[in-house]
Image 1 (cartoon, rainbow, N blue to C red):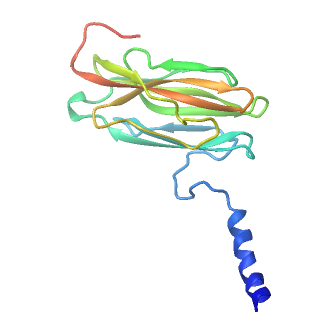
Image 2 (image 1 turned 180 degrees about the vertical axis):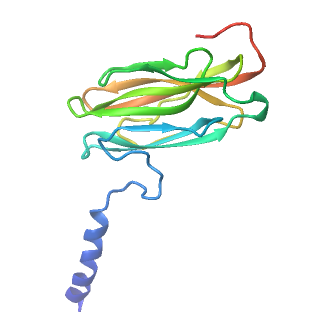
Length: 191
């Protein structure tokens, strides 16, 4: 009786252990080792980032992003552009130029270095200026863990990021630059 039960239950454990442990329902924008180009709908800005790491899949991550409409009083974006790009395998720091806010991300995977190049899609809203900016703690907290970052509330925006790359672990940690925006046009430009 016990051996019959074991033969019946064993295939269930084998099936469960062979499944990858990332969340299938998550709207990943890429497959492992594939490039992607994600842009928020017009008038929306990036507010959340989630990633899942797999050493078995080229030390790469799956990525998911969420957007939210900009506050009504900010109006429509006056211009949008792709900002600076980094090189795979190097540290990177990027803040949207011309007081822009992040409204998209594109990335290309490079198997030679087991890393990605990154670029932010930035949008400017009139002559609004960022203020009260800060960097988040590391996302993920430790290399090779799942990463999850959401802005702290409505009216906060991602302006850029700083990353560190571990050549040994072949993974990145991110510190996102989060800001508020003035409710009036400014006469100066933050760089």
